[in-house]
Length: 411
Image 1 (cartoon, rainbow, N blue to C red):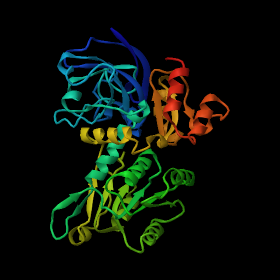
Image 2: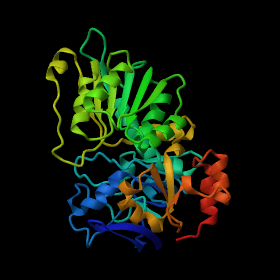
Image 3: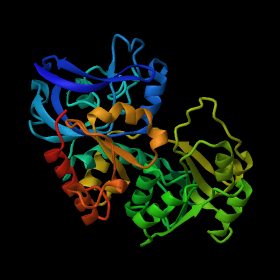
Image 4: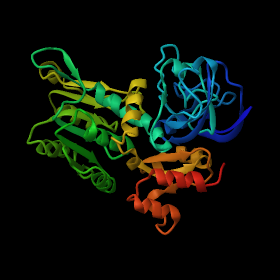
């Protein structure tokens, strides 16, 4: 019987590390070791809502779930049903969005034996049946953990659509060589969206990114310089919405934008985004509103006569995850740029609940390790880890991961 240490949720803001005995796997299950899990604001919402969250069981007090849904690891044992498709010691990632019709339950929100914040887990049959257990051939586990957030970005870009000229048929994806605007785009998801916009098959000609934090904007500008795509970062903190709209129009010669991604749920900004759409432009409400009544006014004249569109995407799917895994493994995207903190499993509960106050980018958990949260920008450059970070311009790396795995104590 395998012993696993896991961060489990018992109710609102009630999280703790438990040692649990995993049952023997069934013929249609897989035993896996989790090596890393990156943290998502969705887990903060989950911890805040507890049993009120739509993806949790009704009785968390008696049936706690393992938290974490951006995880990577390796397969330990394969049930008979899946032995022809998966094998021991194979590295993997999981697309937690199972997209089932019969239940909203997914890994990291709903299950007693599978989630990212654990040392060992049992992957249930439905994950494999739905193609959501995906082999990963990248260099590092942190890269695997970031496949899930990248899959969300890919889903958002793929959901954009534009009219094929002289028809009412749609071409899916962003407009190639168009103008793109990302509002509130210097958080971790925004940075991943910028990276994908710069390196995907369909790319904008001009990309404008706004935010209200100059330090984050400066960092994003350093991480994602203009190349084939002209990129500009704008601080809108001191501007009224009307002034923002005028400034953003001036950046595209008084015109508008073909693709707009809204990464904050603010009514005035949603309405501004609608105003900034070109004819046949598409607005993606990418941020998940906490307020279930969140709404904004749309110009239906533009929808009818100028063919403007609005879409929303929530998470990726197995196809998006597989694409993300391939892009990352082939070094088309450098997802390490969004990691700003690393920590051991012992610090996962406090970090999950404190994400808004901590700020920064992705928080990466090494599940087998016990160490307090480390902010990469504050690591002493004279230490071993500091020297490694300096070698890689302050960005997380395979070398840094190996140092953690080899030097930090086990939990």
